[in-house]
Image (cartoon, rainbow, N blue to C red; front, side, top):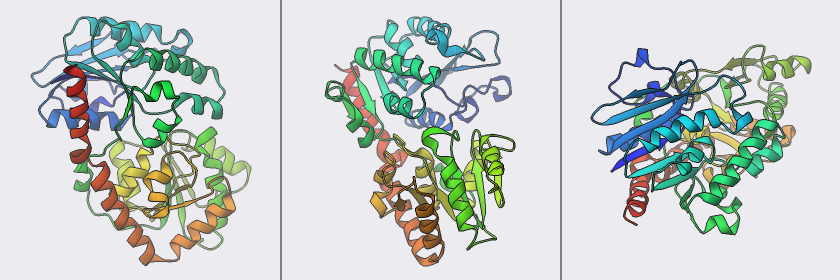
Length: 381
């Protein structure tokens, strides 16, 4: 098949033949590169559609196996007009090409452009649930994205949910045209060196406030540190670096001791940090899937997540493949961390069970064939 995959993606991680030094970064979301690479490995022709800041005009590159179109994204206020500037570029490009299927990612601007284009076969992949996100973050940006989501999901003929949890959030009308296809992970991550565990726990998150719930994780660590004064806490992701939101909160509350505010890192470096950690603490209140948790499972790092945090308890087998607790209660979080750190044998057993479960249920080799079957069905309708 010739599949057009449209969505935010980190271009340097895609297996393409073009000069990576001459390409913009695209958009910093590494899992989309894995998505593209998986279909390339299986012999499909791919047209990748994304956008990037820092370019003067759209870029289009062609090769035998993959074509890449990069729209120009505005630096600021792109959502104010429903991403009209960006969607028009993408829509015009889609009108100019012939593919078997457009696989659009997220129910936002890329899907809006795909559904407004002349492409006859479009499937929209739901990777989060905007009504719930807006409940945690009442800001104009997320309100605009919520409106786009409502338009897209009502207009689309084919929807994919990335988890059973997300599927169950949908109204009955949308469930009738939605299939469940979980996110997958490449086992190439096993090519990383087998790092020795170091004396730190870790949280990886894109954001500090709202449903990310990082403040409670910081408070919980301050309690854990009373029993484990040498244990450090690494925070990786946006708003989690030096002088950013997480550090400001910790300093204000005088609980910053022992915390390394690392912030955004390259994808490879982030995986290295996860691999070396004794434990991942995932304090998020809600996740439609939980990709960083799956990465930790694959890399052999035990995970503590919320018992009501969206798809997280499903991923962790409700306590079989990781520990779960009331993630809204720092005392309970700290108690569970102390319990996990006190039993190395149990920690190792959980890590091994989680790794096996992740490979058997979420590896690229297992899941991508289900995507292929679904895509072929749409193409042949």
